[in-house]
Image (cartoon, rainbow, N blue to C red):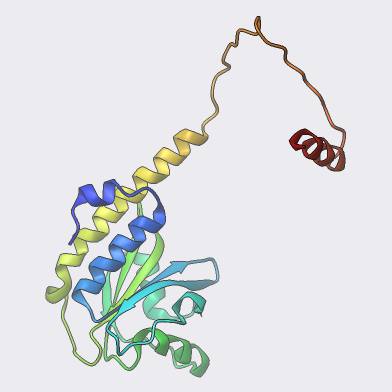
Amino acid sequence: VKTLDEYYDALDRDEVFALVLSAARARLRFATLLIVQHDHLHGWRAMADAEFDVTAIPLLEVPRTVPLLESVIASSSPTIGKLETGDMFVDGLLEQISGHAPAVLVLPVSVRMHVLALIVGHRGGTPFTYGEVADLFPVLANADTALDRLATVRRQSAAPRGRTQVDTADYEVEISFEQDHAARRAATVSHRE
């Protein structure tokens, strides 16, 4: 399990996601990260034993109708359960994640209780308990801290800045206003030539 420093040193969201996914994979035979969207969960990446095919995960889009996944999104709490809906189409999509595993672990990757992604993993046909994967729970707290830090840095860099005074005594400043997009594009092209 990675230390808080490794999460804190992450430069972007994808790096934090990769750290969490790697930690889950260290405890499970299959782990994937699904990004939470408004109406679906989008497959981001997966790591697994060679017997599992993970090539289609980045193309996977699961509708937000899976009770187990929705309960984790609503509560921002990890759970172990069966990944099924009773809908043949959706269950067919879920087989890309769970195969025929009797149970999956679902971990929320959150910022201040707002779930951004889910880690879904399993040990194939081998059942497991919370105690066997409990060391993954601090990983979620580390990810939350790192993602919150990244969001704060992004907000601060986007904050409006005060006016700065520039001494223009030694150079000329030319200001031009183009009336439309086509004129602006033409001016940019002629400037580059």
